[in-house]
Length: 208
Image 1: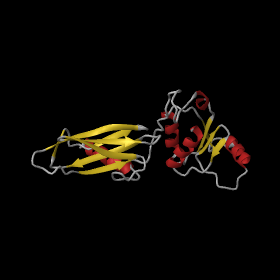
Image 2: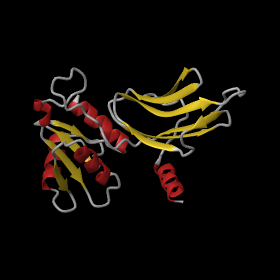
Image 3: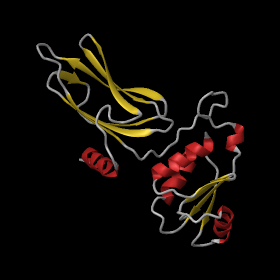
Image 4: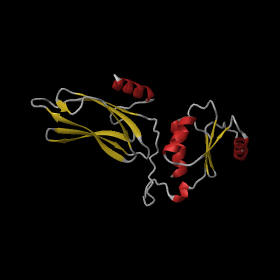
């Protein structure tokens, strides 16, 4: 019963799902060797995703009939399940594959010698400021993303102290609506964050 409650909560949490091959970065693939069929998931993005996989089949023997919920790190490939084909069967199976679009970890590469998306000493020392307010729905998640990726930041809650926020708005000299959360990384200000996805995009720009 506990498992089904967990799955139900996961599916409620998933804002948008994709079947196999529909996701831009996360793909389900299979490798067949003799009677063995192994399912893999590959993530080519610079952020991690949660995935859900459920396989229904009468043609294969499985080590477990339970659905799989895994976190797939950035730029990684992991094995999810191995199926063994039963004698005198066609080898058919059906799968439900869902990718969670709300990625809570950027999985920034901490190796200073990496050549791709990296967090070097200069980037690590960037000054990050996050402006929040009490009724901001996504603000707790934006803070969690920063903390999970060990990005030091200073938070200003404008309901408690709006001085620094008003100073930033004055510096912007923009007629556009300034949303909360508002993110500032060194001299760059990201003031049109409407969702977690927007926040992740802003971080990519700031730290890439």
